[in-house]
Length: 176
Image (cartoon, rainbow, N blue to C red; front, side):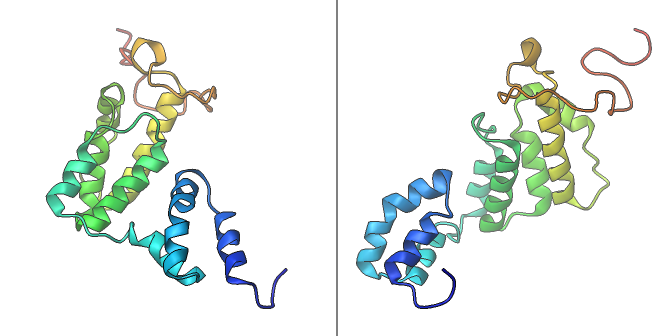
């Protein structure tokens, strides 16, 4: 099907086939209004992206980024949300790292803060690593009450014993 002149409606339909989740729901709700204005793929795509390029005041960005992570969102989704809001609000990469820790649920925040290295300057990389740690932490069911807030995927942690420098919970590694 490559090549040739595709009808405008087919191009828009093909775009909807590439979307999923909330993006698809948003697209399906908005496409009738967009195509009423202009039936071109370019207009539809620009209209869809308009939501993502709206500037946010810096203080509002920090307020949004500091809210506790939505439990229905994955850690990668939460990380991407923080990066996006920081970009739209003109906040720094360091703000992303700080807000990732601040917005973490209390059962994981202290564990995350022990891994925070204030000397590093690669803030987004460190934030991504902490988000990855949070996934592993939840998968190992180390939340309050033995796993509340843990992974709902049913997966278990892989590579047990990969963390050095002490154990989980009250295990200090000193024979206490």
